Image 1 (cartoon, rainbow, N blue to C red):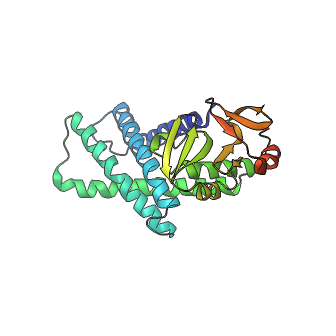
Image 2: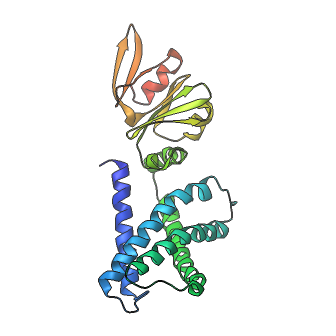
Image 3: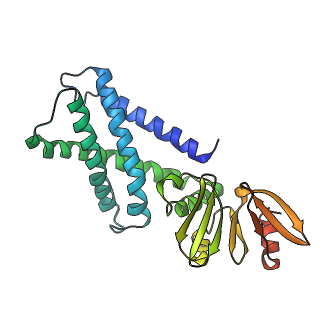
Length: 246
């Protein structure tokens, strides 16, 4: 199963689990049936997870708010709480209850508290998984960190290759291609540890992105899964062979 589908199934399981827990403990239980509360939490948790996917790379990888974990967790929860509160407000309004304006600040505090707890749990789980990971898992992490530079739709894609185009890098994935402003040398450095290797002064290729390898007039050529042909220069032939690409 592709990695992005596994991630979507994981997210769905988390959303259903958290929604069921909040429904069971009767959060916002006033005058509503259990199925309505469950549906409400599925909606708000989906909004929260989607927002988290947008926010987390900036806060925990690009560190735009610094390196202190408590600050990162608080800012993450504060940002996530805004769209979650809006979805909660609209959902309750759809069932005939529009939250009075003077109650909105306190409701934000409640939503922030829940978001902060879930954010801290997510951080602890992520760190526990990282400490127990093997080499292949860490390789996936290196590729994932690089993919976080791309638009949201590519965040859970499978990285196939990157190539240099002037001052840009073209990124090849199973979900398509995207250009980002970056030097190839910096991209290769960032992909250190990923399951791939530089095969040309203008190309880096992931092992999982190659569907075939052939010789063209004595020169090695790799074929990506989308049919793109990648030349392998003599300088990098040994590295490509050792990486299992030829």
